[in-house]
Length: 132
Image (cartoon, rainbow, N blue to C red):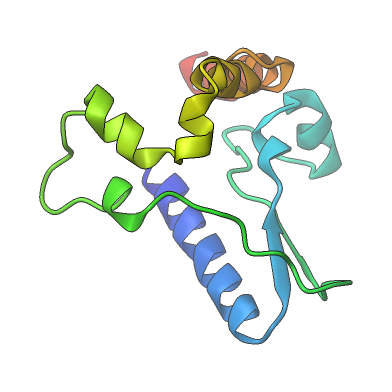
């Protein structure tokens, strides 16, 4: 797993360098999905697993800055806090909290989505190479 960390650090350094030169970047999240397709596409040898795929180029238009969680919700000092209902309520905007089903839809969009199930399937296949 040390190689995974190294690969992600290298990818993020490339992203920071590109963005500093006004080159747009985008992580392609499905790189760890579709095991068979990516294994063939990249001619991956045994014990090799793609961890990051970043595309770079010039933006057609200036990207819109999206709302993000407040830094206090994602950066912690020395320890990970206990996540309470109050903590979660502070993370989300008042508009999101008005929608009683927001958390359920957010969870379903990520964790119950077909891509997530495919990602789990593919990760198991990659790790099966080491367990065989």
